[in-house]
Length: 349
Image (cartoon, rainbow, N blue to C red):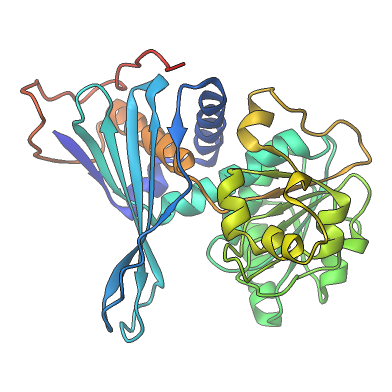
């Protein structure tokens, strides 16, 4: 029997600490050949007005832990009147026989794992003594960014900026209740950057949201928002001053305007990318090597993060007896199993 997890189930079963561990483990297996993935695939069939359409497919395997999976991203065509512009669904399969293990709503998973990716990047790229965080953006993905950073660094003060005063004030109050730290809504982007050890951007901006010349020496930037080739959150000075790390080189060069635009203009070349995150996590490339260098993690989201988090949810659910069972027809008869993780298989290569 497979398990179904609702949006509420996922939020209950995936605490940030578990998500961080899962994402880090996924990238470590990717570095060692125990996992594989491709850049997310654009389906983009012609949307039918008033309906959702299949926008992206994100497949991958985590062979070292005995699973594979896929995230499906659905977009809302004009005229749907949809509250959500995108919907997310995640499937998790057992590698040895292809049986479906779990199907889950991916909305909360995506928010949490996006925060976890920022946390993993922060763990390897930010100064260990970083205490001040500046956040750009106040929408649905922003809270988990702060939760993730605070899980891996001793953050004492958070500055939040959004162009809409009421949005940033409300978000500051929400974070203060959630994290029990000093949170200040600032009136300008300059204030959010100056004095910040870590800067996180999680917006849908088309143009840079801060001036890179204001970044402090030793700062770390996590650009988690705009993921279209004609959108950008960080400016030329930021990419010029930074050691750049990405999740997936091919995907970053294709989809990230933060890199594609300065490359097209000749400001930097693709060689400016220092490493993929798997190489830093796996020890193949250095992360931060001095207290003075500025680091930048630019990411759009890749399959291994979702699969690793889906497995973490499945494991906790089987331990705690949670999730809604539903019937499937596996490729070969087997006894339904409700306890314990899938059996790992030998990594390839």
